Image 1 (cartoon, helix red, strand yellow):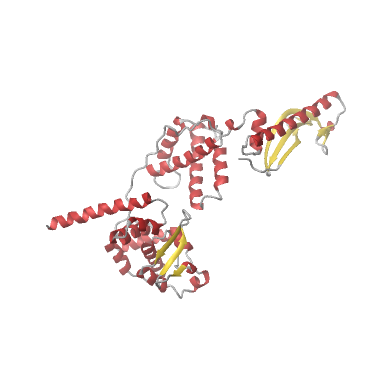
Image 2 (cartoon, rainbow, N blue to C red):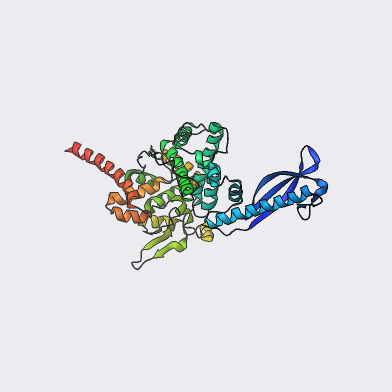
Length: 405
């Protein structure tokens, strides 16, 4: 689709490296304040260049011919801009230069595509999602430098072999900081993001065909960690002397009884607590991740937690419902809280959302369609993951019952 743009085409000079009495002539294309430059492969004596008019002084036939050549170049550049506009292509300084040089978009590099995608999606995608795309970009840069010894990898060279080698690179990549190598699903997520960017290139006609056409993403099904009712009761019954641990525990429990994610709870304000016709308080909010509207009736235990922090000065000023710390700090405290409660599970704040879906709602007979609405899922299929987890739990419980009989 055509984009309104400001175009500037100017000539400029730089002193010749091996002869300070001569100037090399360059052309600069500017579109929306972004530049692309190229050399005309011509030079001129310093005394013969008019810096005000940006042209040669026509004191000889050679200098007249030089000016005529510069006029032709400028006309061709303007024509390249006109062609791109007529073809409804995205107009950039680089695109005009490539069209003039006859290389056009087919010579676009992979990193140019990645930057184009991230620059254009920055406003439409959530910061958390963009953070993941930037992570994929770092992997691509590192792979190109280590595997191909260049960052100038052209899109037309992208093929099935590149994809499989990139997959192997991510799986075996050893970061400087101490952390595990990327898991299978983590690797697939990076390749999924690369595929989305490649699909953009195909739609923009920068690539003639999709190199992912024969490649299949292979995600492994993982079980969602959640707390049982007994574990939830233990955490509720445990009190901590430290104010910080007590707050983290309460925020975690509140999420267990509402299903709110960390981001949604952090942004929750008191004006989003609405009293309905039956004198029950509901949360009216929108999911940060999907922008989906969510309405959640407050269970008594969640309501009690809100009342506990009603008179907190900092919450009164900010209008927040709960005293939420940073995600990193909360997860650090949760490890120590679960250790103190002798719960041997990898518990992060997101486990609260899984606990709401399984232990609090589905286990108590709430229909899966209702749970899907409460969680703000856009597809029922996403909620069915929790139902599969629950079926395993039911199977375990029935085994115990069979042993009794």
